[in-house]
Structure formats: structure tokens, C-alpha cells
Image 1 (tube, rainbow over the protein chains, first blue to last red):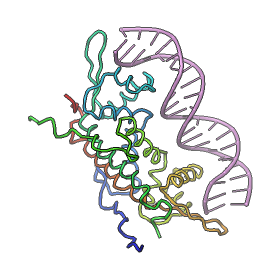
Image 2 (image 1 turned 180 degrees about the vertical axis):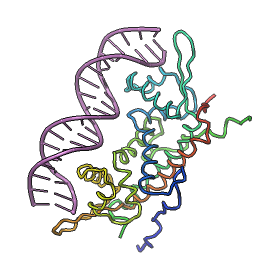
Image 3 (image 1 turned 45 degrees about the horizontal axis):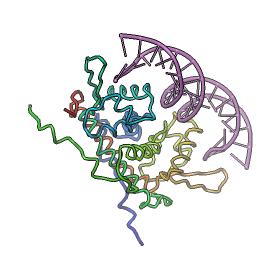
Image 4 (image 1 turned 120 degrees about the horizontal axis):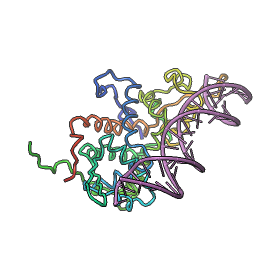
Amino acid sequence: MTRTDKQVRYEPKSKVDREGRPYTPQTAAADVEAILKVLEGRWKLVILFQLFDGERHRFSDLERAIPAVSQKMLAQQLRQLERDGVVRRFVHPEVPPKVEYCLTEWGLALCPALDAMLVWAAQREVLSGGSGACR
Amino acid sequence: MTRTDKQVRYEPKSKVDREGRPYTPQTAAADVEAILKVLEGRWKLVILFQLFDGERHRFSDLERAIPAVSQKMLAQQLRQLERDGVVRRFVHPEVPPKVEYCLTEWGLALCPALDAMLVWAAQREVLSGGSGACR
DNA sequence: CAGGATCCAAATTGATACTG
DNA sequence: CAGTATCAATTTGGATCCTG
């Protein structure tokens, strides 16, 4: 089983970051960190996957769909997602109050990126975890 | 500017998770969370981007390349990455000690997933962050 | 040189109660 | 209903010192 030992190597140099700055390990890491911070948070992914159906969801519906979350955390994480442009908030000026949340278009566009992560996870078994990629 | 309001919708139902369990928002979220936990940590991405050249790097070289990190954190994050199968550790039984780290093949395979995240970030401006994706 | 051990500060999360 | 306020617990990160 002789492999060319070449097909896996990757060329990050082929791209510059989104501000057009020259690529360095530091800038690249900072860019990805900024993205991950949007997704980090105990409940954000759970919320996002609830919203991936593209529909609007009431606050109370999300509470029911995610029984383990507290009101405080649900509200906090939703507000952060809203601030980051991932979800949108609709307030209906009624009594009793009614607030709905849905993904923005950018939020919906997260799907392929999450799929890429799942693909990576799936490769875990096929790629020899034990052997190093370097010589 | 009339859009069909349809082209963005995404179909997560088309896939099952990597254990073949039926797809639910909960299982999907848990899967992605497990992946993000591998990347979370104040210094992991910085370390990974140092290693993406595919070479072996000495502990002291990483320390020098990442001046802000403490020895403790560098060691800790490297051990976690090793435990998770992303990096490999080479110990040279010498005096003074010499330890090198490099990515595993699976670690190298992370690149496309990170690229997908960067692509998502780049879409932020083009996709109307203000408008909801739902009706 | 490459860390392990200890102690401490900061950030995150959770439980509970209260409100327009 | 959809939050906010407060306090406590947990988790995480960092500074410093020690060692084979």
C-alpha cells in the first residue's frame, strides 16, 4: 500500500483573508476565531438547528423544544445571535407579548460550513489518526 | 428587485448523522458541538495554523512563534489536540529533551472545513444581514 | 527543554425570583 | 409571554514556581 504521500497536502497560501491582507498564520487564526465565537455558547447550535427549517419560531416554542435551557440563557444566546446577524427578531406589539425568531439569509447560509465540519468528522476513521502527516 | 425567495432554502433532511441515526435538530447539534469542542480553546487555532505547513515544530519553536501563550497553556492545548487526534507528538529521548508536534492527516484535512467557515464569513456582506430568510 | 503542580482571576453558565 | 436582575457554581485561562 504505497501512497504518493502528496495528495493530502494542502495549500492555504492560495488565499488571502477577506480584507485582502497578506495571509499569515496569525491573521488566518484570528479570522476563524472570530467566526467560531459566533457559534460558541452552550445553546447556540441547538437553537440554530431548531431554526434551520427556515420558519419563524416563538420564544416559548424554542423553550419547549429545548427543555434543558433556562429562560435567561435562551434569551441571552438569541440576543447574541441577533447581534451577530445570524438570527432576526420579530416583536409583535400585543398583549400577551409575542416574539418570534428566524434565521437571516446569512444564518441559513451557515449550513454548508457545518456540513464541511461533519464531513471532517466523518473522515476521522478513514484517515489514519495515529500516523503523522509530516515526514 | 423581486427575488424568488426560494433559492436560499436549504435541506438538512438530506443527510443522516455519521452513526446513521435519524436526523434530528438535537443529534445534529450534538455532532457539531463535539467538533467545535475540538477547536475551542484560546490557542488551538493559532497552534493549528502554525502547523498547517505540514512540518514538525518543536515545542520551543511554537513558544517563540506564539509569544503571548504561556508554557502551561501551550502544553495543555497541544495535549488536548493530541488526545483528539488532530496533532501527533514526537518525543526524542535526549538531553536536553526535544519534543516535536505535527498535524495528523486528519488534522490536515481540517483545512476545507475552515475554508468553508471563511467562505461563510465572506458572505456576510453580500447576504442582506437585515432581512430575515423566512416569510 | 518541556513540561507538571499550585494557586488565582476572569468568563460562562445556572437557579431563582421578579416584572411590563 | 418574554423577558431582566441577582447571586452562586462551574469552567476556563493565566502567573508563577518547580523538576527530570
